[in-house]
Length: 156
Image (cartoon, rainbow, N blue to C red; front, side, top):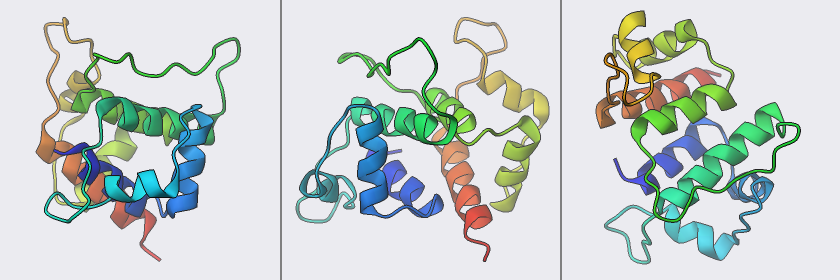
């Protein structure tokens, strides 16, 4: 799943406008202007599309955590190191933290987009990669989670 698609879908699902997104980036000391944000929100086939790097998406997700949960005392916000990759499991974990979701909440959100998952399958997604029961999060699960989040938040 492209980071641009995820950023655009999260913006919609969380009922955010461009100034809100810019504010979230600013919370992570990752300043971004409207002119820099617009190409990141375009679809791949649109003119002016610029790929969203893992570091940019991680800054947005960490900014969401700060916006919803506050800054962790005694720790400065850290950007993703330049060569690091952001996995779907990391993205799901950061969204879980930012939105203060429990396992039941995530299962219910996935059910809204007709995606079924058991509690044990879900817990395998949040294990460390070297754990024997670790399960990588696929694009389909992440896509359905964000879709379900949009359904839940835009039900009115």
